[in-house]
Image 1: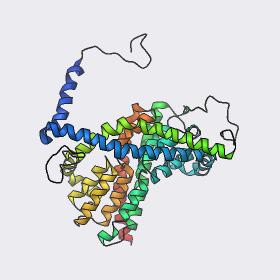
Image 2 (image 1 turned 90 degrees about the vertical axis):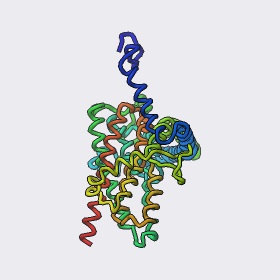
Image 3 (image 1 turned 90 degrees about the horizontal axis):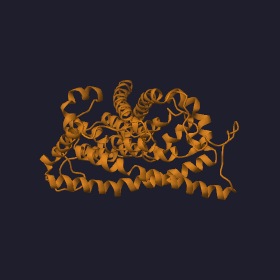
Image 4 (image 1 turned 135 degrees about the vertical axis):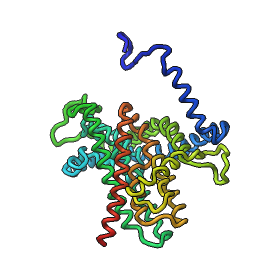
Length: 394
């Protein structure tokens, strides 16, 4: 960095190798889609997908953040965060290496979606329990349980279509997701501890205030009703900020991911509609099916498309599950693996970047994605072999 330059600003030669290499890569990336879809359809699909994501996904996530922000502020205001930290510290610290308050992130994301943990992260009293290196791992542990209730309920609802109860398979999948969450979070903590150090405190507005007395917690001023209203409004306001902050990451990254995952329209033609694509990721995954099948025990080659789709969107992955069930291509063991991987991954490729950006940890996005990739694989492998073992016992 040049002497006298603004803090955080780096300088490079006006013309360098990347000046000429980047346009080639940029044009080649668009050509990847345009050759198969046509340039006009590629551009239209990109715009339409981004628009549908804004309307169907971002606004929904913003609503989730507002509601969960209000709820988390209430939980903090009336001591539930402190209670959770006190009760769950003996469990969360040895298993996840996080304070007991992180369990609230598990609960909120399990009941809603990945970004719900961001509303908690905005709460200053919640942040107060974390060391600086622990705070970015909220992205991993939150994502590992994102949409958990929806995924488990949906997978169990397939029981009539498969002609057998799937409760056991879903529970095994849930256990697999827990294992994956531990792996993902612990790997992430290795990276963050090296980056921040083990003793640095997570900054919050409480840090500049007077030291909090032992066994005490800060509250808002006013009577009971005033505290409730203020907590709801302030928490909801933080949720709005979180919802707005994830817009660039969701629209840009998720659009690309969905176009790499999806195929043409139902007619087999490209029309420029939203959510069309070139199906590159599922095609590549099928090429290594001989490796993946022993690890995950898939009953058919088509099954690999579900966890691959879960990289971008758990909802889309669940809709694929219905199609494969109707064609008789799945067994209960597959449901266990899908539950674990759809829940643990839950579209992390399309949300991790924006979540880490919202937490102020853009430099660690790659580490978070790597950690969660390994965690999701461990979730699926664990679910498969747990199902095999329990099936042998029973």
